[in-house]
Amino acid sequence: LDPLHRCVPGSTIGILGGGQLGRMLSMAAAQLGLRTLVYDPQRHGPGFDVATEHMTGRYDDEERLAEFAARVSVVTYEFENVPAETASFLAARRPVRPGPRALAVSQDRLAEKAFFREHGCPVGPFAPVESPDDIRAAIADLGLPAVLKTRRLGYDGKGQAVLRQPDDVDAAWAAIGARSNTTVSAILEAFVPFTTEISVLIARDLDGATAVYDVTENVHREGILRQSSVPAGVTLPVMEVAQGVARSIAGALDYVGVLGVEFFVVGDRVLVNEIAPRVHNSGHWTVDACACSQFENHIRAVAGWPLGPATRHSDATMTNLIGDDWLNWPEILAERGACLHLYGKGQARPGRKMGHVIRLT
Ligand SMILES: Nc1ncnc2c1ncn2[C@@H]1O[C@H](COP(=O)(O)OP(=O)(O)O)[C@@H](O)[C@H]1O
Ligand SMILES: [Mg+2]
Image 1 (cartoon, protein in one colour):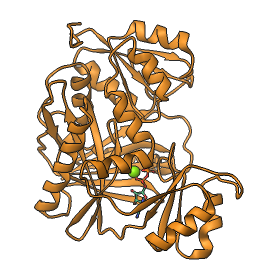
Image 2 (cartoon, protein in one colour; image 1 turned 180 degrees about the vertical axis):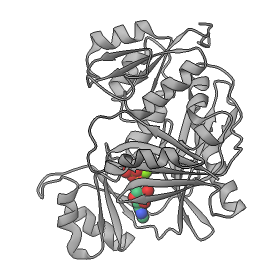
Image 3 (cartoon, protein in one colour; image 1 turned 90 degrees about the horizontal axis):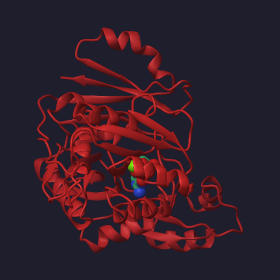
């Protein structure tokens, strides 16, 4: 490692999290002659099957974490809920990329929205709430419908409830797992009557150079991403605004790696929804439709290498295979232009992402 901690081929990238994103990051690293060591509290995982090596350990087990750090050149992660203490413990030993600021901002929906506002990024109306009474007060301001979300640990629409009428307050409070007389750190957002949801994947390297992928149009069902397609069905100015916002967020965080930024499009307005300091489900199409995928660019960035082009050579649609959807794998294999990706997960549960298919058009 040089003073900037640029890796050489043969170096080991440490990846926290052994899910499908860790798996696809490991595949990209392998292509570049880099080794991976995946760390996860679970004994099995899609990432373990593919990484060069893997370790099971808790995120608060300092002995295991120290061993992990000693075996890698740099540390990255596949999910944003890496505990802050874990990240700082590792950062004292090896470079952690993306850095702790990106984690702190993306772990807390309130900090995240406040960060967007501070940096001039357009966001919808929101208010912090800690009790049903706070919600009632916030509704007076934000109106209905509104979306109640826990500040921390939500994903795939979990930890969220939509309020349509004033009577929904208590049910929504219960739906996010809160008891009536306890305080919970939550956020109430005005429901955004979006026409489209889009996202931007941006890669930023150690020297601040960026590669921005084409804007992706996303369809969610029950809070879970179902389909992403490029090109997005939005106007060029909307695309340019979204890509500009993604650039300024990455710059403000002095970000290294791939960052996902989700947006709501309301007519010709663009509102930031949330960021993910990692490779993102809505960027999976870059594997089959770009010369250099989001996974490769993330690995390049965290290794301290220059980025590859984010240029797209095909139109593409990515469909998640959720729950039993993956059982159609023989038909998908027989389909022309369909690229099947399965994660090797044993058990399909409702809502569980088992794989995805990218259809090039
Ligand atoms: N304020 C909102 N207005 C309208 N729809 C929303 C709002 N917040 C979330 N949603 C819907 O729920 C999905 C998941 O919410 P999101 O905040 O992205 O959480 P996560 O992806 O972490 O579960 C969004 O992509 C969108 O479809
Ligand atoms: Mg989201």
